[in-house]
Image 1 (tube, rainbow, N blue to C red):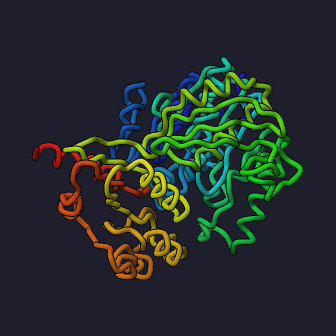
Image 2 (image 1 turned 90 degrees about the horizontal axis):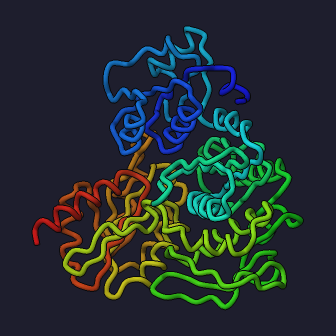
Image 3 (image 1 turned 60 degrees about the vertical axis):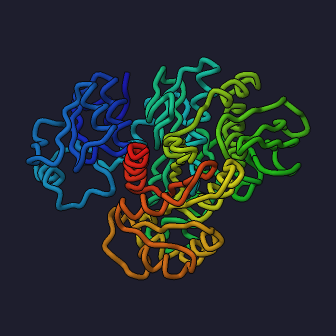
Length: 444
């Protein structure tokens, strides 16, 4: 028996249905036997998946009427002038934002585990999904990316709901999870907050709403379950080893050595994601053997240090990193994994983020010997010279600027066998990179 909006209505229209979170919610509602349709400005792997399920998706066509639907769900990127949104309001339909709708969906599960933080949300959510799968739990995972095995939605029951909790426009405050994870509280999305204090208070309110509170080194909630480096945390890693960017460690719960963990994904930062996932899994009474198995079976997330190909001995990698801390971690991982030189192509994501964190971007990129900064992915924003990719490039002496795929192909042509090319960014750089790698491969 479904609760709330999902229980009281029979048909749902998603405006912006091609988004990773929106498409996952559309799939879930469809699996509940509801009639689902939606629209988006472009076709994607997500819209293709929805169409394969029999969900009607309008792509860049004449706006479909929402008159025949009970509920209209929209993303924050949709302007109020959107014709379907305007029609829904005029007709008196139930109109709800993605963040509020996610909160309503949560009401249909026994226990809700929500993962927040400036970075690492998708990876930690996926790690939890694999642990719960290994433990044969009845759960649903709503993922803000594409797990290599599970995609962006995995559902096998309603005892647990594992979801990402996004801080953009304070959306995570709509959620009242049973277990709240705060991976980190890095500065981001300040365009949605009054100041850094407002951002931190929002994280405090989020974690404070939960019964089980999990946070890094107890920075927000010292009395909750803590994870981190060293003996001060409840869940910690010791005897850490690294082989070509992949890590293994002894997992400690307090003073107890539970056993050895071998991660199948790149990056030291993923140790912390695994520790946070472990804390949540243990709070759900999951044994160490299932945690070990689940973490070993997690092969990664699309665009999280994903290998795009190997052409002429040059390895091409794509990573979603778009915040200075994420970029630093990704570059560090790449340097450990690469046999030769490292070439980096970075696409800034939004003018506001670049402008806000300009000095930090310069600091993490300035030491690179081979760097191309690609045109800014504006997303929902208008041009701002102070936060543009060109301005950023001009402040980094050894960098090049590019605004066309040909610039990228020309830049990476200097790479030779043993070198690595790392594409960084959360915008369309991923698709551009895949296209460029294809064209480079065709030349050989």
